[in-house]
Image 1 (cartoon, helix red, strand yellow):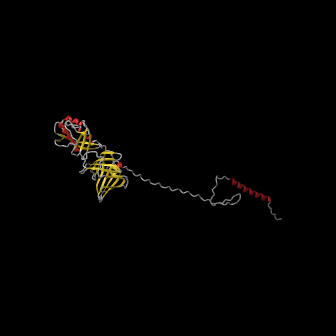
Image 2: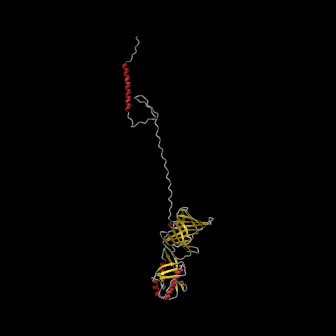
Image 3: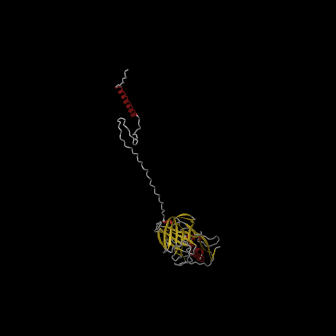
Length: 404
């Protein structure tokens, strides 16, 4: 039996298988080439190697560095705004309106009162005249305060002045600066017996009237004592505290009431003539006086009225042109010519009594011993009496009695 002869594959079949293999490879490449991709370059993972299917070469790749994150800027904190400093007008500490203020002591008892009597707001200076009433024996006082030259200055202070008379513009040798510009912390000036300084400009002070924003002024005296005062715009002095050198409090003044547009009242005694007799009668009346009031009108209005049925002589048609005090304190009163008409109608005896009644009224009120009387600026001359230049009238309280 013959051994089987091995069959050698034909060259054609090998070529066919090789071609099929190549065709499969080409189809695979075509399929890969036709696969849709996302637009834009595909991210290349770091440290990944790809083989180019066309060339079989391995391209060299650079590892992708991750992007550096942009740091978030730290916000700069805004500066805390400083509080706007209070700017004070020095004139505001000297109100010129009709203002009445009462001050109480540490026991709550009224110890001081101030009234505005006269005020003037000139361009070069603002000035106010106060009537000051205290519990001491020198009361009442008249005080003039001026705001001029960057200072609030007390220019005039006179004790035991019971009358109302305009002394604005009056000065004395010893003036006292109460407050000075600039109204800021640390401003300091000299006063008699010590130094005065602004020690606070925005201090909140509570008194019975309420809470106020005040300027603190401290006066330190050579003996070690001190006074602390608080001033408020459109008010003036709010309160005052005194301290001994030991620190012990010596006195207290705190504003307790504030009234405006009321004026003040004075008790004035008016003298009248009882006709056909040798007697003079008087009546005490409360007279309301407003700031900058004409005292002449206050007096003549009272002389024009008498109690019903009393029969007293009145000065119905008379007016007062002016009242002034001379350097000696004597009072000068200038009347209208209607005074001569009235005197002419009442006779010589009643004229003498009328002139005495006028002298009693004006001399007593103005705390003087002489009254000079004129008519429209000239000498007094009636059908019964002529007063020479320099001749005056004196008060006479004989045969005087009060009205019932």
